[in-house]
Length: 136
Image: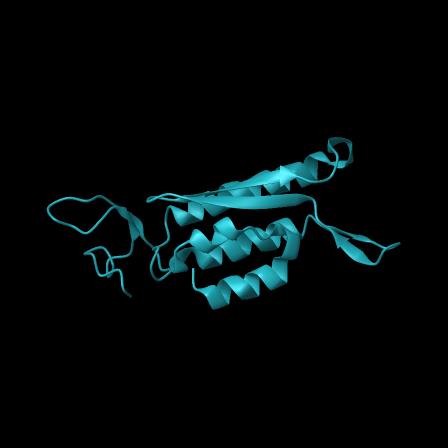
């Protein structure tokens, strides 16, 4: 991910940001933002301290055919509701699914391509970037 975009996201999502998110290809930035926004909505406001209370910390692992996000609960388990827990799981699952169908380079619709007949690599690419033109 471009360093300027990473810096903006780190400033926006604060404690939920993890440097593993920098490893995401540029094309997967929007699925990341959508996931972080959904996880941010789990947060609550501590009126006494006038601050946002985050419910999860997140890290990301990047693979050739997708990326997976892992959330670690910050708040004690007895404070979680079934709805909040399910919203967290859905956000993580949606993120992985979207990276499996989004071009790693440009963010358009993509498909898993395998390295055959001299292609330049395996990964999720749109038709334009499937032939190894990964520079954009």
